[in-house]
View 1 (spheres, rainbow, N blue to C red):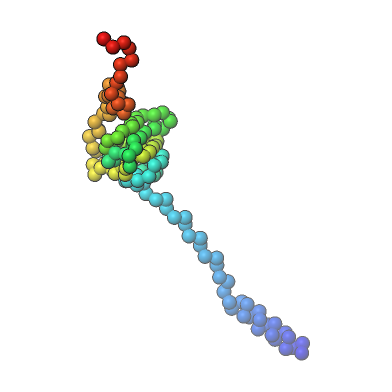
View 2: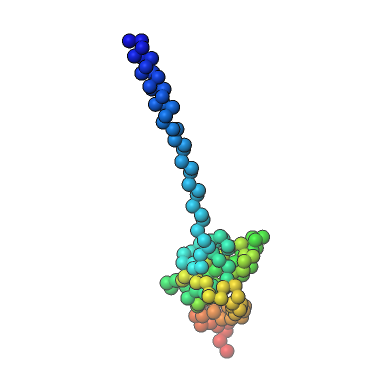
Length: 147
C-alpha cells in the first residue's frame, strides 16, 4: 500500500508540474475622456477645452418664453463678458477662457469658422438696455402735476 501511495504522489506531482500556471489578465486601461463638444444644449457651466471647444457659438435666443443668459469667465475667476437677451445671440469663447455658463438659451452651436470667425458684434449699449427695459415695464407715466 505504501508503494501505491508513493506512486500516486509522484503522478500527482508530475501533473502539478505539467500544468502551467495561468497569469492574471492585464486590467484594461480606463476609457478616454470624451472629446470637448461643439454644441451646448443644456443649462450649465462648461470648462473650455475640456467640456466644450473654444470658438464662436450662436444660439437662436431664449428657450421657450424666457430670457437667455450667458457668461464667460477667465482663468482668474473674473467675469469677462455676459448678456441677457430675448433675441438670438453670438459669443466668442476664447481658448484662454476658463468657463462658459448658459441659462434658458436654445442650443449653442459652434460656427464652422471656429476661432477664425470675426468677433460677434457688441451687445447693446447702456442706453439701448434702458430702452429694452422700458419696453418690459410698458409706457412711462407722469407722476408730477399735469401741465
